[in-house]
Image (cartoon, rainbow, N blue to C red; front, side):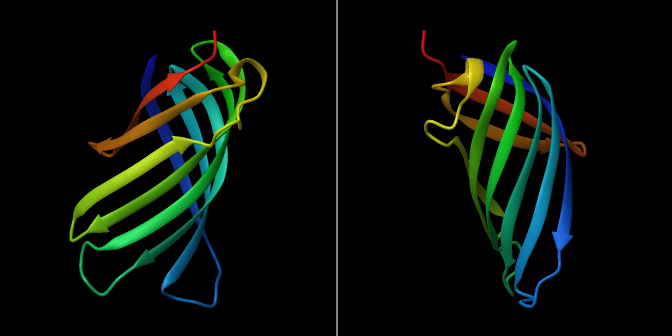
Length: 126
C-alpha cells in the first residue's frame, strides 16, 4: 500500500562541544494518509565542501495510518554529495504496535515550495 501527505517539522538544535557534529530534536506532525505525531533525534555533520553533509536519525511515530492506529519507529540515513541527495527512511523491523504491528516499509520525503511531502510504501500483515 501507499500513503501520501504533508508534514510539518520543527528541528531544535541542542548544545554540544563539537562544532562539526550537530544534534537536533525532531518534532513532526503528519497529515494525510498518516495522521500522526513524531518525536526523534538527529545527528548531522557538514563538511568544508559546499553541498556535502550527512545525517542519521531515529523517529518514534504515534498515530494512525489509513485509519489503523499504533506506533512505529523510522530510521533515517541521508547524505548530500556536492548537492546530490541520497536518503533512506525505513521502518525499524518489529517496531509497530497496536493495529500497526508487523508494519514494514520505506518513506520517501520531498521538499517543494517550502513544504514537506511524504510518500510511504508499506505492508501490514493480513
